[in-house]
Image 1 (tube, rainbow, N blue to C red):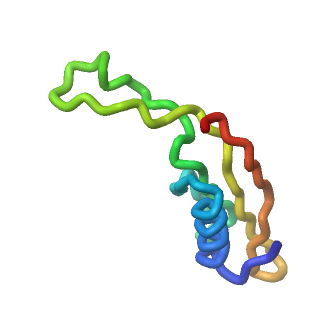
Image 2: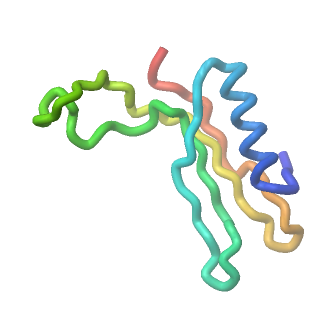
Length: 98
């Protein structure tokens, strides 16, 4: 699938996530050193990864529930150099949570 802008790719994944029943967030952006243009953009499930220090073990005032579950669902948008368009480079729809 090809997108003219990154915003179109982001909107596509957010719509897919809404229909599938999960939320997304930006994980990583990589830019080219030559001109600073975004060449890769990763969007992931909001339950991706794990919290570094669990709040229930840390000495903090507000205890928060564990929300990150190591989910692997993500999309990677990659820049096509000769066309200035973005394509879906990788797409993983496997969730590790209900």
